[in-house]
Amino acid sequence: MTAERPETPDTSSVPPETRDWTEVIERGCPECGFDPHLDVPTTGERVRATVDRWVAVLERPRVTERPRPGTWSPLEYACHVRDLCRVFRERLRLMLDEQDPVFPDWDQNAAAVQDRYNEQDPYEASGEIAQELRATADAFDAVSGEQWTRTGRRGDGKEFTVAGFAVYFRHDVEHHLRADVRG
Ligand SMILES: [Zn+2]
Image: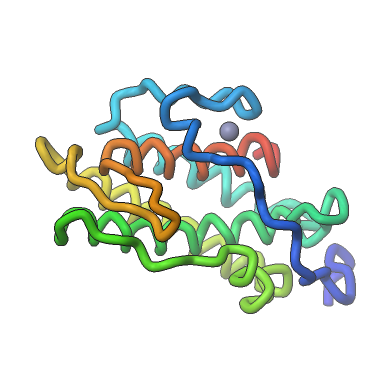
């Protein structure tokens, strides 16, 4: 137990999001200044550029402190982005390998509680998020030509092309970094 960590980090559930985040693919995001109209083949490069900033976030003191009740701590956001990378890499693989697949569901709030994100070791999380971001960046780097137009859909029926999915993923990583943890 170090001075920076409260004795019992809050691992309770935060309220689920109600905003439809898929609209950022067309419109961008005023909250974080996200520009959706960048060349989609640069996705990997841009995601890779967030690695050092995420690592720096996890080196801060008090990473388990929630800024407000109902908002995740920086550690929880980092663990979320780490796991998001795994989930999105699998969804990308499905879109490339299968014809218009339906993605398996992922309950991100349940994952945060079940896996006790706020009790994870920030040092280990730092290594893991760097590795996951790089692996997902590599996966998007490997996409070429007509693969960008392949499709898949979420359980709620929302359809994605690989190109739209790349924009959506990059926004998630950058939004959490800029707007949520100010990294
Ligand atoms: Zn945003």
